[in-house]
Length: 170
Image 1 (cartoon, helix red, strand yellow):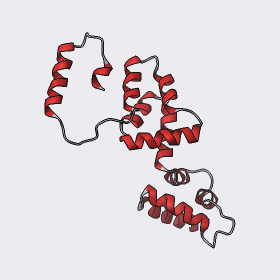
Image 2 (cartoon, helix red, strand yellow; image 1 turned 90 degrees about the horizontal axis):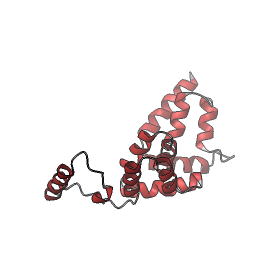
Image 3 (cartoon, rainbow, N blue to C red; image 1 turned 180 degrees about the vertical axis):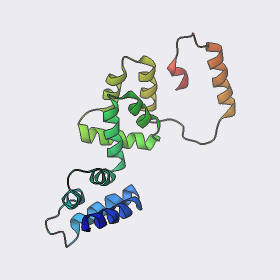
């Protein structure tokens, strides 16, 4: 009964706060006066709910800083290109910069080089991801209609048979 109740309480708390608030909660948990041994929240969750189990895994994952989580997913994506593409293409410029830093810290590697190595056999993908990873894409929600028409015209003129030139889109 107690474990089930604790699980429900943990789920309720963790799903009702942001990642930034969860990071704050982790800090407060370690520094609270009742936590004499300064046990990290992740360890306390493992002790209370058991090391194995989906709920434990999900709760501990929810305690991971967002940039670290993206870096971990990107690292897994080096062997699963759809995941790599998803992580890179769904980030804002700032998120990409944070992920690059987190990746470097977690894996002691240069993320850009690792992505390049993982995609070098696919030239267009490699070029596209390299361009996105420069983290300088315009992020305005305003559509430049004239530019969109120009791009569409260029695509139509090049046709499907022309060799792609990814630098056109930089």
